Image 1: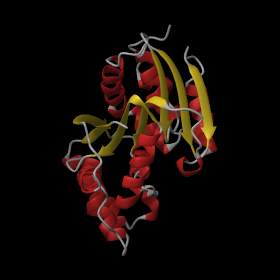
Image 2: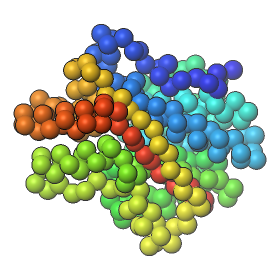
Image 3: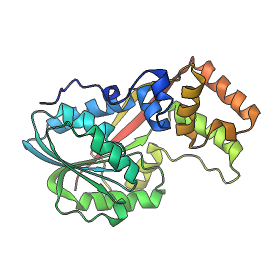
Image 4: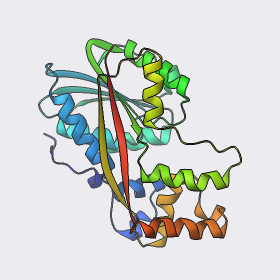
Length: 264
């Protein structure tokens, strides 16, 4: 059986000389407990569902790191897992990260807009889909609701307003882009849902942390993941200001997410 105490970081190496060859996202994951904390919270919620068999859909599954945590913790459930992501690289990484689980696994390279659900699900998870506009979020959640069983539950995860990553993006991206707009936050999503008669059954707030290492290459990769561009592509004065932002927080960021729970 999977180890319910399995650490997400077990999926990644820690030696700096190896992490240097890893993707920015992998380096980010190796220095944060964000997905671990989220996985534990969702395991606790899903474990309380009365059914012993769980059909779970993960929209935007990425590299499967959150799924690995979930499936390792849901040892008392017979879980069938479907993960979808439009990027083949992510699906390949998910396949590798989930190969030792004892659950039924299906992974599909497909965007949500093209996904045809073959069945209805007990649980649907969708996290941090920042490309969606406010009206798109409403349509997105409405469609998720149609994919749930009558007794099912969905979780939509989004960054909270009080989050150091959002604060940093807001402060520096406004200097990088003329067409900059404030990053969407959980509050905006909640307001959009309330304005469109989507009932949110429960809202949880989850805090985690990310440690920014002193190693220049690793630090640059984490910041590249956050900004979705390399530090070298930014003006030198901005690089210096970003470094001050990091050191002012003693190289540790507090991150916060809201978990919005909804039903069909």
